[in-house]
Image (cartoon, rainbow, N blue to C red; front, top):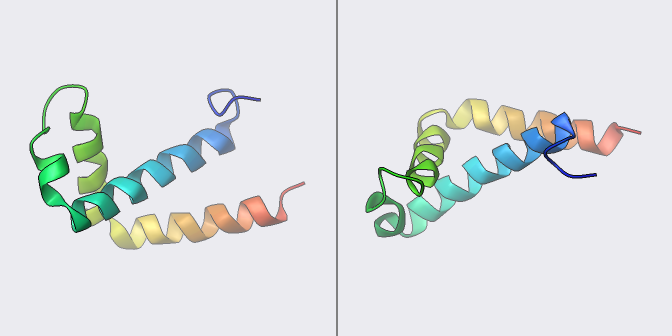
Length: 72
């Protein structure tokens, strides 16, 4: 089943995208900072969400990991 049609998988993909973009921006800020608008601006926005809401993103990662581990 595709991640688009399964809500839990879609949330996992979005959460991983936010975490990956925040990590990439921490390691190489010039990669994401030059694309603040347009289609590639989505990655910059995900990085900003990961930076500014990091405690909430961390809690969501733990909850998602537990739900994946203990789901049927």
